Image (tube, rainbow over all chains, first blue to last red; front, top):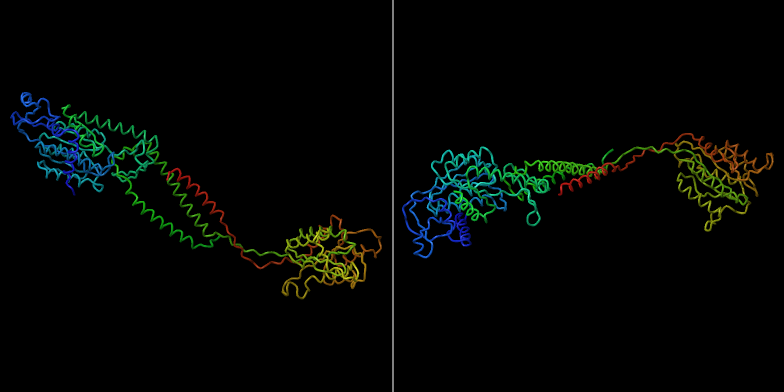
Length: 298
Length: 336
C-alpha cells in the first residue's frame, strides 16, 4: 500500500500552490501557539500569521514583513479522535468512502502538527472497543496512526458509537490537549451534549463533520440513474425510487435541516468550532476555513 | 376431472425452484451494486418514507401472489385438464322407408310430398330413414341411414328435381321401363325389400332386437299398366313382414263411397297393415304419422359405452389471464 502520508502531503502541496506556500502552517501556528517569551529568530511572514507577531522594526529594515519566532517551551499534544466503526465504511455526499476523507483530514491536521513540532496521538474505535495510541512525534508515527484508521474502518466491523471514544478521552486523558474530532452527521442528544461540555472544559476541540450520503436527492445524479442504498448499521435495503416521491424528499430535506441545526447548536453551545466537508477534494479548504474560524473565535 | 400431462406439474415445480434459486443467487450478487449509507434513520424514521415502504411491500406481496398464481394456473393449463365421461349413446330402433310415387299423375304434388317428407325427417331423432321413388320400376335414392344431414341434402335434391331446376334432370332416371306407369303395388313391394331381411337384420347380429318398420307411402293410387303385384297383395306382404304402411294421398278426391275407388283402396291397404291413411293437405298428417311411428318403438337400443375425453382449459386459463393482468398492474406500480 502506498504511503497514506504521501497522499496527504501531495494533497497539501496542490493546495499550497493554489493559495500560498505555508499558509496552513501559519494558520496552525496561530491557532495552537505554544509561545514563550524567549525570542528565537525571525522568519518571513506568510499569510495567516498573527499580525501581532510581526517584528515591525525588523520588517522596516528588511523591506518585507518578518515574524518573530519564539522558542517553544511547551510541546503541544494533538489528539486525533475519529470513529472507525461501520458508519465510516459508508459513502459520503460525493460518493467516496467516508473513511478516506477521514484519513485525509486526520493526515493533514497531523502533518501540520508534526511540522509545528507537536506530538500526535490517536483515539479511534467502534461500539465494541476503543483504541488509544499515545502521542509521539515523527512521520513514521503519523503514518502508523493513519494506517490504523484506514485498516480498522470497514463494512465488517462493529457499529459506530462515537460517545465511547469521547468518553474514553474524558476518562483517561490527562492535561490540556488539542482535540481534533472527525465524525459524521451524528444526531444531537443530551448525553452527547453533556459529554462535549465536559471535554471542552479540559481540551481545545476542533470538530470536522464528514457529510453523509444524500439518501433522498431532490434531483437524480449524473446519468439520471439513482443508486439504491443499504444501511450499514442493519443491512436494510433502501430502494432509491421510494425516496424519490416529492413528499418523501420534502420531509427528508426538512428532517436533515433540523438535524444539522441541532448538531451545530449542540457544538456551538459546547464551545466547539465545527466545519464540514463533503469529499476528499475539499478537505484542505475545509480545514483552512475551520482553523481560520477557530482563530477568530478563540 | 383429470390431467392428461400430469407429469408436467413436477417438472414445473422443479423448473420454478431452479429459477427461484438462480434469482436468489443473482439477488445476493446484485447487492454489490447497492451503496452503503450510514445514519439510514435519517430516512427510515420519516413517516412519509415508512408509508411508501408499506405501499411498496403491499404491491410486492400482490406481485408475488400473482406471479405464483400465474405459474400454477399456467402449469395446470399446460398439463391439459380433461373431463372424462362415459356415455352410452341411445339409438332408436325404428326404420322408416319413405316411398314416393314419381309418376306423371303425381308430378304436381311431388314437391309438396318431398316437403312433407323433409318435415317428417326433421321430427324424427335416432330413427333410420331411407327414400325410394317408383314409377314403373322402383329405385332407392338412399338406403336406411341415421345421417340426417345427408337425408336433408338428398331430400333437397329431390325437391330441386321435382321443381325442375336446371341440372337436376337425372334424378328420376331409371324409374320408367315402359311396362306401364304408377305400378303402386310393385313400388310398395320394392320399398319393403329395402328393409334388411329378417334373418340378416342389423348386419347379421343375431342378438340385435327386431326394429319396428314403417313405410310412408305417398301415392294417388292411380294405376296405369299391369303390375306384378297389386296394392292389396303388396299390403299383405307388408303385413306379413310386420311393416306398417302409412299412406299419404295428395289427391284425396271424393270418387264416391265404393270400395273400388283409389282412395278407399289405399285406405284399406294401409289399414290392413295396422297403418293409417292421410290426405296430404290434412294438417294432422305429419304429427299423426310421427306419433304413430314413435308408438311402435319396441326398446331403445343402448350403444356400446364410450369414454369421451374433453379438454377443460377455461378455468386455469382464465385464472392465468387474471393473474397476468394483476402482475402487470403490480409491476407497473412497483416501477420495475
